[in-house]
Length: 382
Ligand SMILES: *[C@@H]1O[C@H](CO)[C@@H](O)[C@H](O)[C@H]1NC(C)=O
Ligand SMILES: *[C@@H]1O[C@H](CO)[C@@H](O)[C@H](O)[C@H]1NC(C)=O
Ligand SMILES: *[C@@H]1O[C@H](CO)[C@@H](O)[C@H](O)[C@H]1NC(C)=O
Ligand SMILES: *[C@@H]1O[C@H](CO)[C@@H](O)[C@H](O)[C@H]1NC(C)=O
Ligand SMILES: *[C@@H]1O[C@H](CO)[C@@H](O)[C@H](O)[C@H]1NC(C)=O
Ligand SMILES: *[C@@H]1O[C@H](CO)[C@@H](O)[C@H](O)[C@H]1NC(C)=O
Image (cartoon, rainbow, N blue to C red; front, side, top):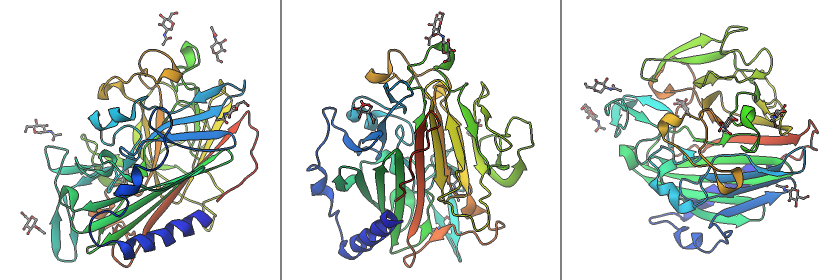
């Protein structure tokens, strides 16, 4: 939890210093990059690289069971390619200020209806924060040391949201672990926040033979995902919950099983155990027998968006270190943590906080813990 406190303290400082302009803009250019122009953080057994475009994760290296170093996430070799992407977010970027769909595109606070700039469903809904969403912005870097990097962003009424939102995102690695801590302070006005980070994984780094180029043979276990959010024909959440019946297509809770060829784009509800320490019970376990790599995901959020890579959104070349050719259909899977979808427009979901004000700091975390060949690494949580 130390990191969380640091992020909070840091954030309070940002809030007090900030008046106008961005105090970190000048700092960003000073941090060292690798030969590709990416920011690298590393600890024993794990190395990550980022670009400040979309604060996107570009590479995640880990050694497989044969000791071969694999890059197990999608990304681009050239960081300058990110701003040219049409996706929202740019590949493996932050998703915000409001992840997923917001039907509307408006939300009500007390008696005022706030209208935002819709970018989906013919302008009648908002997707991933709008066209100027946080995953489509170039972030500044406030701090960067060996094993940690902090991105900051000041959103001034983008996409029609009122108020100024100061956002801070810290990635930290410790042996075999990657942790993301989000913190947002709304300044001047309160508003809805729902942050996530996209990260498309292929635990074989695309180095495997034919049968394992895709994630069909990856095993996925979601122990607390017994329900999923219903959506309409356009993918907009209706506010209803459906149950993931045992043995059926959406049952990843009763045991781990191969992902198979179905393709997924679903938001699942996470029922955390009562009083359980969310740092100790994984909400997702993804593994590949081929590379021997297992990834466990821990979060304080109550939903998980499971999304298999869909070539329909455009072809993507593999990175140099991953081989030749394009990412195959269903070649990767992203497990984005989230809050309940479109909660701001579903007051019937009682007692869920969907709006954050000047008095409150929005925070959330996600931790990815890796092991190879089932060797549990010594826990070294931050
Ligand atoms: C993989 O193993 C090599 C050789 O031991 C080591 O130099 C490298 O740092 C390891 N890679 C990672 C990501 O830990
Ligand atoms: C939002 O739009 C509605 C309907 O057009 C309008 O009545 C309302 O005043 C607008 N709200 C704001 C905060 O601009
Ligand atoms: C957008 O509008 C067109 C024309 O009215 C309609 O055919 C289409 O289904 C709409 N698309 C969405 C996503 O609502
Ligand atoms: C898989 O194997 C087939 C037949 O050997 C080959 O034509 C194809 O290109 C291979 N695909 C990939 C992605 O390696
Ligand atoms: C492909 O990988 C699978 C899974 O590791 C393995 O069983 C199979 O023998 C491999 N096939 C070839 C042709 O390398
Ligand atoms: C948060 O974002 C996720 C998608 O990443 C989405 O499924 C959900 O709609 C959002 N939660 C709320 C409360 O809007």
